[in-house]
Image (cartoon, rainbow, N blue to C red; front, side, top):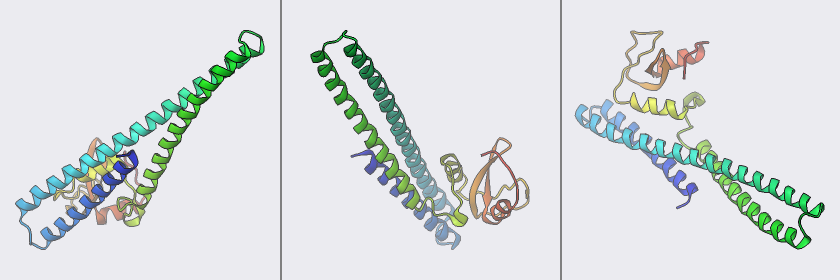
Length: 204
């Protein structure tokens, strides 16, 4: 299976897990699921979602790494090509030797560039998947970084709002989490609306 297919599967799994958790939270709020069942199922879903996000990040990092390696290798070979051409021009390398070497190096460069292009297409395809994924379709167009997303997962199992500017809130409808004064704090919908409308800064 290609990187593109793997990333697509991971995106689908993450989106599916989010929908399942929302359904579970709805059933729990309606009293149709016990606290014990909610905790068990929610933890399983969070673990699966977090694992998928972690795997996705590793693949994305691998794609970036190999694309950078390919670019550097192509640059080195191109420099070699220039050096050998210079040697052929000053008579240190005969024409037959130059043709042979330039053909081999040219094939290597073409192969590397093909690989780099493939990595680029995979990265673009993944970016397109992100843009169209339910993961990005959040209210108020609020986007979360992977670290924020993991923080949100950890605070989604019945946590109460811990808005540092409104410590007595305590709502359970958690929207996301923020990193503030060395702590990951779950924030509810209402508090997030207030925070997003004000010029408040915190460390992400």
